[in-house]
Length: 448
Image 1 (cartoon, rainbow, N blue to C red):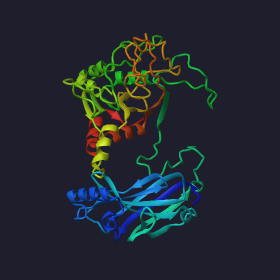
Image 2: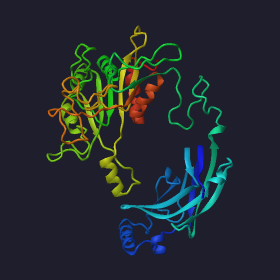
Image 3: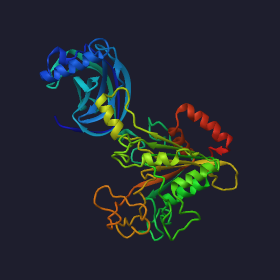
Image 4: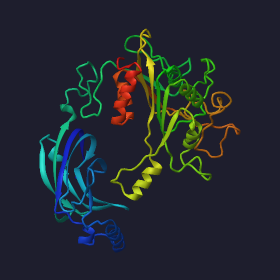
């Protein structure tokens, strides 16, 4: 069947399934050895004995675009009643609904239901019970699933391709945070940009693009904080320095990040750090872990100081299998790269403070300091003499003359109400309310 481009928004609801059976028990559809293994596990955890765990997914061909929660103890008629708003740019012949049993070794397939893309393409609402089929698309008994779909082509969106032209733009629909007014975004390329940045990029107002300097601005923001410094990172390494351009010196710019944070905390600034916990690190045999994030070094550096540094692993949710959970815990991360500080007001006249955040792709760790020149050798005795990072070539070293690993990424500085969204995202709901009280008592304003 020909694949059709779905470009727009797909609103989908999975209501319930009915007349489900475990195909491995009912028809012996799996190889005997696998069937016995699955049955043994199911008997151990009670599957088939009143404690089934069922979930459903939505696929556009091979692209997984939605998944329900896991329903327990409803083996015949699970009722999810979950809705999804899916942004689509997919080539597909069918919207595929899959029903599975969750178990410790992965998932047992019950079956799949198919709805042709041609039926939803006109934009009409489709509310229907679909037949659930096996891998050969033969019906699985009387099993069926109740779904509702409606597709909205991107061309029906009055704001499509117009950009954010005025304050009337409502923002991206169905997003967690709504569009904010009165914000400012500063974009950075790489951790640093030298004075002789090229090429010159003309702007619409006749001026030229003036690049920001990410780590310089972060250094200044941390140094000038009076109440709080919050950092979340995939990797945060205390031994790096943020300022390394000899042509742009700062007083005290040779201080390491760790010493800077300890100094700020000794001044009474609330310094909180959330660093990913690489569960393969620790112990004498593999202290650095598979990802070499220095998480154990960072935790040890701040131990018994006023800096609160917490190592946070990526925990799987309850719906994952044991094998999948082990994979998530050891290989996946929270992947945040956030710095939040209190900052002076734009006019510098008021004594009130505001929230400023830095968000993007550049960690505060070794190997990330670079410019658009990406020197592999020439900076080994200057900017990178204490920061040699090269995971791709095991035999390379600064003693052998490199090469170091170049690093190119982007980052941003957010000011105004949007900065508070980042702060809110980093806190749980209860902590957020407490945080607002603390910020208010500290004279920190929501005003940009």
